[in-house]
Image (tube, one colour):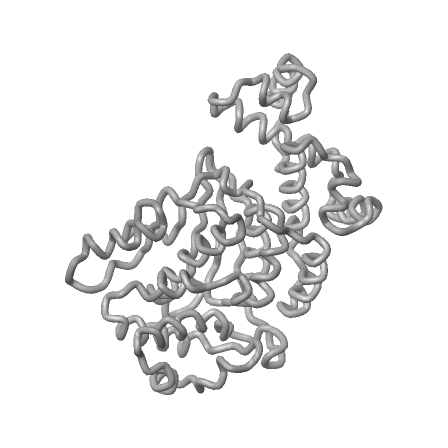
Length: 355
């Protein structure tokens, strides 16, 4: 049975240009820069296409600015047509680096695991693009990222492809591993009439997995254990500073539960390294144990409660999987022997889950 972890939709706010997200559907200028850079390499006259879409090219030379969604989509569609069948979204993603995504990129680079990267992306993606809703679902074996448009007209295909490909690209960069996926699904059809099989093969080479067009939903399926991959060089103290800035930039505070999900992720990783002490977890977040306790109390929970729930979830997952000996599961989760874990599992089966 699927368990939805986080869903985030973003609403614009009436704030000064360049400081916070404006009202209405829009995209940050840096979300379009990789497309423009790639189009330039393909000898497309980018300035002319910007002007034709009603966007002054200088907007991409400044700091953080926002482009109205209809014009941004028009520009993306024009560039895609001029790319003449080449996968512009994939080519743009391939050239994207973590730092190219501004504050969101730096936040993700300061996370500890891809699960935290996903949490931060859902929390702050509205800084980049207010036209989409992103959902992360954890199933028995797969993690699934779904993307839906909140704007009319719908998000154009090249931007959907760029978003999906960029998620994979940044996962590879952050973990320094050749991350592959199970399947990528797009609701749109693959445009053009020539060499369709070879074009699909290009997408499959990029994603290292199956690619399907004309699907019911835009979604990216990957091995669930990828969420636990470690980021190569996390920085908890930097992340704390960046989160405060991102909160002020988006004009919102974190939704209730976001911090709890991050603590769950830290506990999950801590169990794998036999360190789930309150001091160890607090250090990961760059705060004192008292601050951690206060934050969790404000959200109606406690560290021991979350630790018990995390053990329960992991024990259920690993024992149902059947590939890992129960003695190893018990050792990883901090139980003295398999019998103690079995008793805990029997108790959990009698108790209703609360999250």
